[in-house]
Image 1 (cartoon, rainbow, N blue to C red):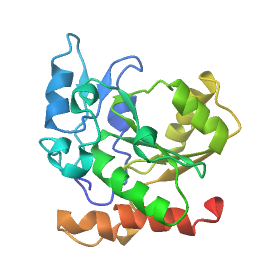
Image 2: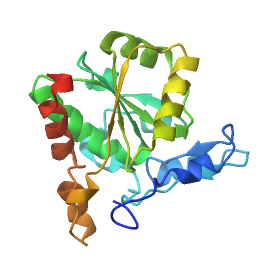
Image 3: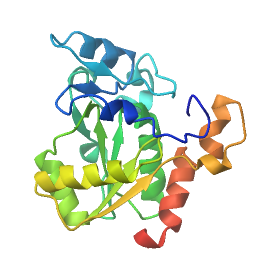
Image 4: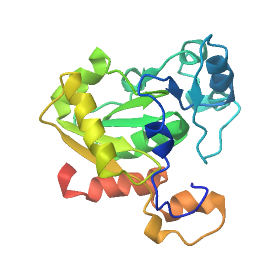
Length: 210
């Protein structure tokens, strides 16, 4: 959840200290981690505090996804696997993949289905599918495990503008660290409303998505 509990400084300050064009990755699992390492260039791998599974394909629910394809993919759409909708567009990085699948199911059950995209390389380049989604929904939800600074928000807006995406709402969902009191990792996401149930409740109860 976070190595210092409540993050008073954005954990992504490591990103800002590296050149923008320097390859940065957040692996999906150990399999993806080694695939990234095999790439013949210098790179930065960001390992968040969340548990990194050995293989996300060890779960039967994930069998619909081509494991071989996903090992080298930098941007992955879940639309073709039933996780899509016109209520918004969600971007999140690799470590949040299991949570995203659960979140997608919960949003669909509440009639709030959204397009979901996973990023394993930063900064990301928008695919045509991502651009189409943003043009249609006009709402981007960026899910991350840090408190976004204004500098980071401005950088996101500028990054989207350079890729032709303007006049959309951008919302940030991060752990509610003020609610976090537990010292046990297995309960921290739930308590900070950063598990799938907590995130879905925050989205559904928000007037921005009513």
